[in-house]
View (cartoon, rainbow, N blue to C red):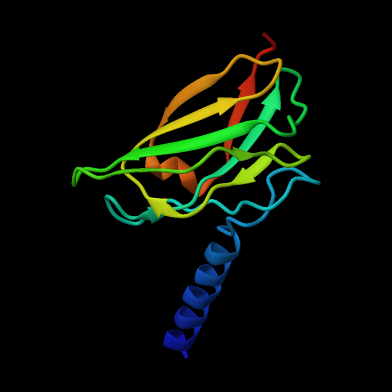
Length: 132
């Protein structure tokens, strides 16, 4: 009976752990779910979910976002420029990830170049642009 009780506790603890780690749930009400995915290994495939805002936290529609990846095996991968939607969100195509450089530009705002760690792609990448 004691073994059954301990097994039940372990199953319950595992279920709670899994429910608490749902990466697709929005962090803020009304925010779209995360579609980013960090690569599981060096030079592995990942997906960047990028969200662009102004200094007040308002989404910037039609900001252009590009991701470049310099892999440890010598290859260079990149995306084309992709526009953000009305919520300031763009999900870039899956690609092999290495050293990452994110480029963001929008009309009326200062452009930014950011170096990202691949593990950060597990969550949306949030970028705030300043007016030019």
